[in-house]
Amino acid sequence: SEDFLFAVFVGSAVAISALPVIARILMDLGLAKTVPGTVILSAATMNDLLGWCLFTAVLGAMGKGSSGPSTVITAGVLLLSAAVLLLIGRFAGRAIRIRWGAILDSPAFFTGSVAVIALLVAAVLERAGLHPAFGAFLIGVVLAEVIGSDCIAHRSVAEFATGFFAPLYFASIGLRVDFSGNFDIVLVAVVLAMSCAGKTAGAWLGARLGGLDNRTSLAVGFGMNARGAIEIILANIALETGIIDQRLFVALVFMAVVTSVISATILRHLLKREAMEAAGGRSATG
Image (cartoon, rainbow, N blue to C red; front, side, top):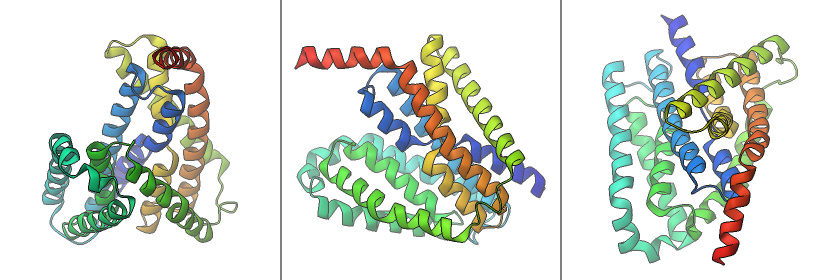
């Protein structure tokens, strides 16, 4: 039923993590390659991948996505596309870096290549009945695996996207939605409380079952709790396709902003000791 699918969508929406926000915090603290940082980044990557898969499947099942095959075939195409692209990034990344490393270091070539590949994959997935945004997300995950975030061309694309496209995108959202008129304090409080409690507790429990100590597990929980821009993008797609109304959209946007601020502050506090140790190790090495 549509009520069940709506509930599934809300679950997938609050399950999304802000991988860029988390990665930036960990890199600023120098903890991206430590045990807590690796766990958080790996879990956030898989979490976002599965969350987008679930969200895209809900779009197809509700008949709000692009026209295409049946829901079962669409789900199969979804999983197959994700698996193929991730396998390419995982196993071919090293060979690609060795063979075409010099070319990939060219910001102009890399920016054009990313644009063409992202549009191509998005078009193919849209033709298959999936939302094109999922294709762009997959390409981002794969390219990060192939070239890494330290590449000059990677930083060039990231700066261009965040400096030019991101402001235009979020400005367009602000122009279409009446935030003050659709701000429901009760709905916002419920969405925020349920999102924080469910995500933090679930990630904390998973980390504890994985053998991490309580403080590190709390860091994983609060790190995964950040939603950021990814949540806003997902909510905007749901608003455009009619799955949610503006009241719920405003609540999700508010939750995305608040969780990112809270999680960043708490994560810095919980991992303060690890950050000092990492800084000391770099000083000793230097």
